Image (cartoon, one colour):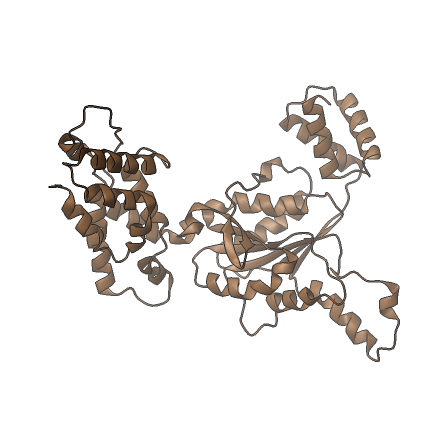
Length: 395
């Protein structure tokens, strides 16, 4: 007889946290709890299968269980984020389930090890007291900064096959690592703070020369504010038509989101042109107040234009040209990143050299930096960073 069998039965009474039943560690635990302890081979196999599943994520069962429920996207958490009041029945259900899961978190396997007739080694795992109800209610109270589901675990996402997919190893660019363009960057930071604080925030177009740090600015800002509830979703130009569905799912989310479109440009007959216009303004479905579009481009008006576009037999040519140029006007904030002059370039090189601990006299550093810029298409923050990284590598 397995003394832990009642735990197995209670697992199946879960409603709010029912997704736990599909979790590989809990599935392995179910097998162990229902195993016949007199069948030594089966008991040892079930015990070690549970340990293997747990050890894949750590050796503390209590913390594993708590982390899972904190990140779980469940009916209670979704109701807390919605406009409707959470029902009394659901609140009572939560209270009982958290109490049960706290009891379950004490499971250290000692009682089962004592029943298995086996003299060999059986692994052990850690448990500890954690107040599940207090910690979970605190998470709910601060859900606007922590988030839930995949948004609690990750802060950068891409779109894959129409669904948000987390980036497990995002760019770690920080604001402190960026040099120059403080005035331009301050505008992006101020707009992002407005978004986080629930004030009106603009869609932002970062326009300018290649290599001036437009994309790095957006990524650094996203990293700087991730603890305050900001999430970054990178969107490719050919995925713009999928955005309305994504925006709809995010509208009730308590977090704030930046839709990041990098290196944006269109041809005049591009189907994605209309999709972006609808996202920025003019769609039947309003853009949520918890979301802003940040785009970078080397083109001020975003549309590739040729002299032949201004010829032809179109009667209302001026209207067409106005439509093409109207897209950039739909960004409430346009920030220009120009190629740096010599003084700014040298300042960026000095700051980067200090970050990378380059031991070289300043005069020599500047001579080498200018020579590198001449050989690599001119001065830019990107060229400066490449130069310093080459110095650091001893090249």
